[in-house]
Image (cartoon, rainbow, N blue to C red; front, side, top):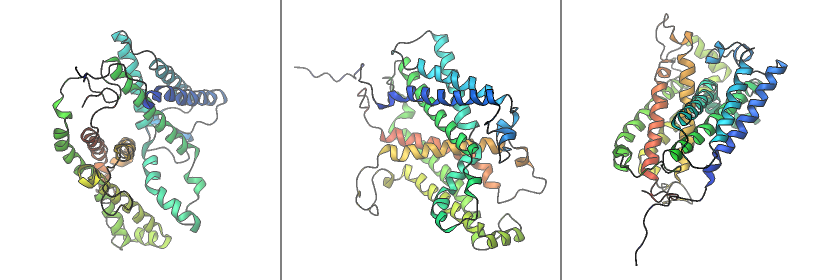
Length: 358
């Protein structure tokens, strides 16, 4: 009697196999809306039509009359590409596969990184404050000016980019003979082993935690009356309006994010610690750490690109301010957080339920 331990080469479809049709539907819907904008000449929320000005967004370089038809072509083309990735698991001709993957990854990058800019990261940081303070009328902002059509379109682009990237990654693996779920192909890749990922993941995690911690220091300094990187008169105005406490809340959010980032390389990031009532000692679901960390990594990278593409950001004629200096490190933050998250995934993924490898 023998036991067959070979990986399953013809696994049953799973939930992640719905990424491609989901991406096709989402991108197709927004492609039709972009086409409607092109026909009617109304509704395009970027560039000169952005109520926030859109200076920290590369889409400011695209004329508003060209934007809608350009997005319609990109989105509808990406929807067709996503539909093509739902076909049978056979390897297409190499030029076609290369072209399809290049187009899908390029559009995913534009949607997830170029379109969102710093607005998405900002709202993610302020959202807890806005939710808690809404019943008390604090912070003193007009919510209609915060949650705009332009902001909603940025989040929609982010969702579309992530869906398309997931669909492209799975199809890329499937057509290369690897497991579409875990990417394993039966070849030993030393840097993806748990031991190797633990080494380079630790460096990435500490780097990703340091940057938001430095950002939090400036906001906490303002809260206690220290004008770190700003004029004392400006600090007095913020204290009078109460905005300094909103900044402190954002600093607290950044500090919590830094601590959670360290959880990617700590034992309490793998098993719930003693202070988590009801789940003490249970394994932390991998997705509970990977999904939000990936979202923040993408948002930070998008914010970094928007800031670095803004001419005023590089104006140091008045000297380098300690209030904005930590933002110069944001590109390293996004890359490091993405690397730390991937290392965590490699260490925790275990054997693949679909192919049996690992």
